[in-house]
Length: 210
Length: 106
Image 1 (cartoon, helix red, strand yellow):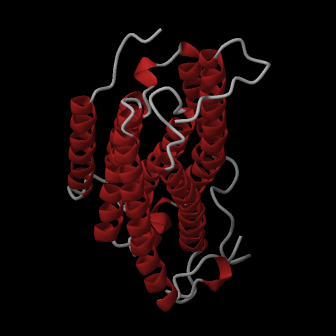
Image 2 (tube, each protein chain N blue to C red; image 1 turned 180 degrees about the horizontal axis):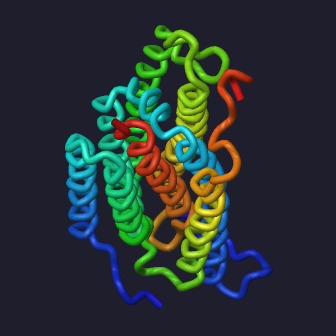
C-alpha cells in the first residue's frame, strides 16, 4: 500500500479525509435535489391527474420492478461489506465484493432493458410518441413520460456507479487502498448507496401504484 | 469522535431488514387500500432510506457536519414537494386541470 499524500492546505490526514467525505455528502445532497425536483413534478401532476397516473403506470410489471429492488438492495449490501473489509486491510476481499456489486448493477440494467424493450414494442413511449392506447388522456402521457425520464436518469447513475465500482476494484487489487487509505473506496460506496436510495423511492411510485 | 461502530452482523441484519421491508411494501400494495397505500409505501421507503443512511453509509459513526447535510437535503425536498403540490391540491377558483380538448399533449 502506497502512503497517502497530505496536500498542503490540510493539517493532518484525518482532516483531509474528513474534507473528502464532507464534500461527497454535499455532492450527494445536490444529486438528491436533482431527483427531488423530479419527484416534485411527479407529485404535482399526480395530484392533478390521480386516476390517469394509476392507469398509465398499471402497465409496468410489478414482478420485474420488485426483482430490481431486491437486486439493488443486495448490491448495496455487498458494497457496504466491501467498505467494511477495506478498513480491516482486506483489499482483495473488497475488490471481489465490488466486482460482485458491479455485476448486480449489470443485472439491474438487463432487467430494466427487458422492460424498456417491452414498452418500445408496445409503443408505451414518452410524450407524443405514446400510442399504447388510442387518443391517450394528457395525464396518462405525462405519467408515462415521467416514468421514462426518471428511470432513465436513474439508469445513467447506475452506469456511472458501475464504472466507479469497477475502477476502485482494480485499484484495490493493485494495492492502492488499505486500512489507512480508503476514503475513495468509501466515497464510491456512498455514491452507490445513493443510487439505491433513489430506486427505493422510484419503485413504489412507478410500480406499486395499482 | 466515533461513538458507534458498524460491524458485519449489523450489516447483515440491515440487509435482511431492507428485504423484509421491501416485501412488506409489496404486500401492502396488494391489499387495495386506495390512497392510503401510497402514504404507507412512502413511509416504508423513508424507513429503508434511514437504514441505508445510518448503517450502509456509516452515518451513525460520522461527524454531525455530515448528518447536517442529510437533514438540510431532506428539508429542502420537503419544502420543494409540499409547496409545489399545494398548487394543484388547493385549486378552487381555477379549473383543476387544463382542458384536454384544447391540447392533448401539454
